Image (cartoon, rainbow, N blue to C red; front, side):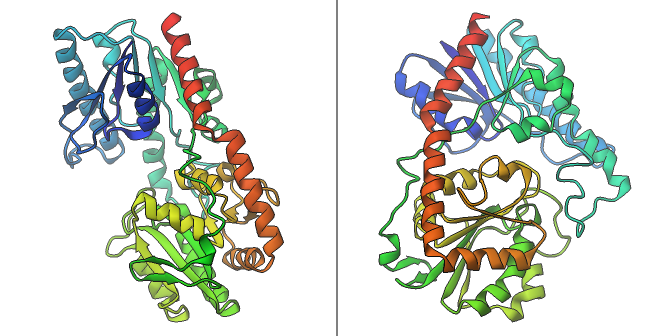
Length: 406
């Protein structure tokens, strides 16, 4: 078969299915994307130029859509060039988030399309105004609704949709859900696996050193920001460190902002250090930045209690990987997490907005070693049942076959 994939940051969410298809050596694989250094043997990249900076003369509520239509045009131009060279895909698979797929039906009418739907923005009931500390002003609500312009156009085009969780599907309007299949994402269970002997040796990564017998509490996010509960984690640390002198904390994540608002003159890390820095020991709290994947896996394998927090928003890959590694999970009692973590079976849940409660849950995990061991086994068992990469790839195969055969 001839496959065309589309994502502005190759390979995006399609890494595993691309590797699987390329390994079979039975398919022609082309990927339209912006230029980057990533390479997968057997996949040809066709690059387009991104839209550049936001246009200051475009209404603020329409700036993202302005970018999306520019991307759609650029991708369609690349697609037209591929068509002129004789390439006609049997199926197009891509991400709907940036508008790149909007015009491809004009280039190849009738070619089946499978689009990744990540999130439908709502002004109530989900991430917006979930955290009372960071309220969205009324004048900004139209901008939230306008973020769905690409979603709505994509839903009006031919094709099927996929999304990885029932929670993400629930963010879409009732009338749209029949167009979207839930295709759970998988984890490499051979790489993300428990290491029972990890605590018996010293762990070191740059300035972070954890000796046998010391307790390691971990927290991971792409960026240290409120959407992933960084402010809650930081506020839980003073009481945790006071109660447990044997605890070292590793905070993994960049200083940018992936989701939510940026601070005008600071990072969230700096802001939270100004708030609680005097109450925490810098020798025991380590900001690790972003880590190489192998080091990140080693860190979670060594972790005595792993914290995952999120708004009612898209769940992170790190949550799936922590389950597969068999971490002793302390996680926020929010809808996307509840789809993965059952309280008392695969982890401990705690209210997102309660730093004191988070501190108590972490202490409970550290103090009750029998509970932690049982939850670790439960997390790994759940991952083996629900996060098998083979199941993810088989699900993809069934959807693609159904699309291509009509």
